[in-house]
Length: 325
Image (cartoon, rainbow, N blue to C red; front, side):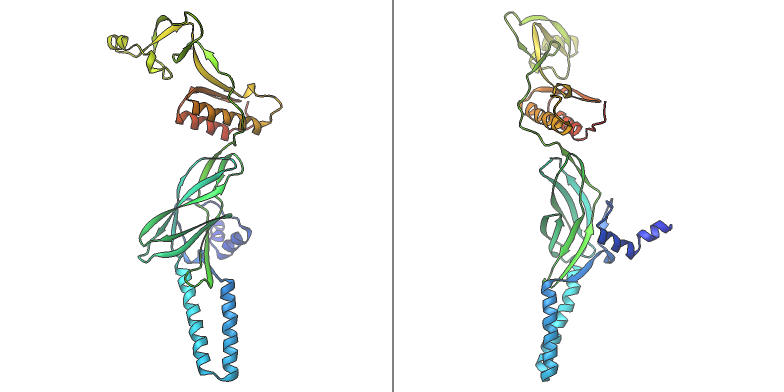
């Protein structure tokens, strides 16, 4: 074992990470072994301990036999509760689950799986991340999924912050907790603004077309099928004879396609404002069922439609780097 690995496995390094809140993402399966679980009394536990001290002093002062019995009985219950509080989260196993993309300003959902390897259930386990708290009971020999909502503040990849697994079971006098940070991240899209769609541009070679004037529905011939062509324009009789996909083309017709171009935006808009505007246009075009293309500096996405095309465009906007040309 190298010196660096030995230092990182020491208790002093673990304490330093806890105090400084510096935790690297942990890949794979995370097990809450004994050295990762901390136990301290709560305010109720401290009040209870002070009460026991006062009861003991009173029993000694007045030589009360029943006072001794009551004091040591309550003290024994408190000591046993420490063990139960510790055992309630010790040796839980945490693995990364599913994440869903979100828009900046919304809550991104991180899914983690908590496995209880013991036969006995775990009660009132709290999963805390920033200001969000989820409470869950874990049945024995089961894996339970927990959704952790985290506020997304900016676009791009967002790493799951440090998660605290804690409990106050059974009496609330002691708190046992552990820190975990699974290696999982969510893609955050830019926050859309409230702009309307720009006007459509036309492209004559598109098969999904609309008439633009009198005499525009004259048949011009057949051409090879393209994925963006409408099924209404496929020449099915010619397909049966030629055993190849062919599409009818018409003179004077133009396709409905929307071109979302970075260069068409006002020069007064900064990078984030442009990304917000393009994100809004992508969402509106997708809802309207239009074919749309996205053109960014250094990257371009050809016309298309559907959920996969929408996700591709939003991902390009989320991961855009201003230095591209």
